Length: 385
Image 1 (cartoon, helix red, strand yellow):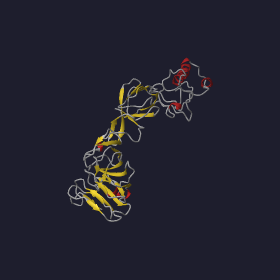
Image 2 (cartoon, rainbow, N blue to C red):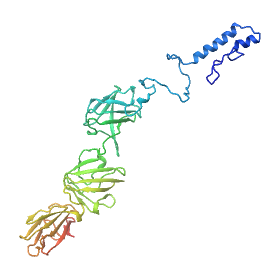
Image 3 (tube, rainbow, N blue to C red):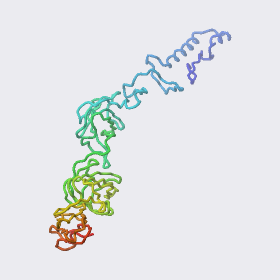
Image 4 (cartoon, rainbow, N blue to C red):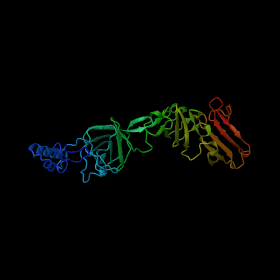
């Protein structure tokens, strides 16, 4: 019994114990026999065998309680089965640190220490981008093999499209066991351009920001994305967004006729319902009728939807030719700036469309008249408000 269960070595000849085993035998008139000496020596040998050799020969067979003490002067971990030295786990320069990524812009390489052997779920890889990525991207760490990088959108994991980082960015990827997921992507990611249609399906976008080409429509639906999803659209043409109190809620509860450069911020409320929380016109004009951008003009001119015109007829009559292909909900406003409509009338040219249900131009000859027109469709045409 070399140790007593609490780590204390106890000398024994099999009967007597302690520091005076042989004195006890002598006092008891017992001859010191070889068998007793062997027993004591074997206890000593067993105790030394159970001790930890400083050259690493002794295998540890159980947990080692440290009693509040610590291992000091340890080397840095170099294998996956080594435990970490404190400085290896501090900050970003830990075992997941790959330094500056090598390879190419879209095929990154790095070396982790300790070396990995697989992209197990939960593995973290960090490093510095040597260049901006320009498309779908992969990583190969420690020559384990190529693994694809994905980014997380509300619609799920998607391939990178380029521009997710620039030279010098600190990157972090986490493995799900199949791909590496980019953790620190920019807040707004670009998507492939969309084409205007009655259903402008935003669920097909691969980023939060998209250009909308064309004017086909009017746009009445935006597809389905989870509630809380945001999308930013920039219009390149003049499609109409059609107001709906449930599925397409717009500022002013009215249709919006887009213009090139206009920006819309849209929030999904789930189940295919969307709310436009911000609409900014490229012209700076308000999307609401009361906040139109007003222009002073005279003579003949062609007004555009979403604008107001202060018409000066003090030098002669004026003709405003309305848009030839308006969308339902388009609005234009006019006002007599000089108070001379009664002598030099303003003519509203209908451009082959009806005004107040009539196939006639509108003659305005009331002093200080101020009014608006909203297009209601082919049957009644432009309506005065």
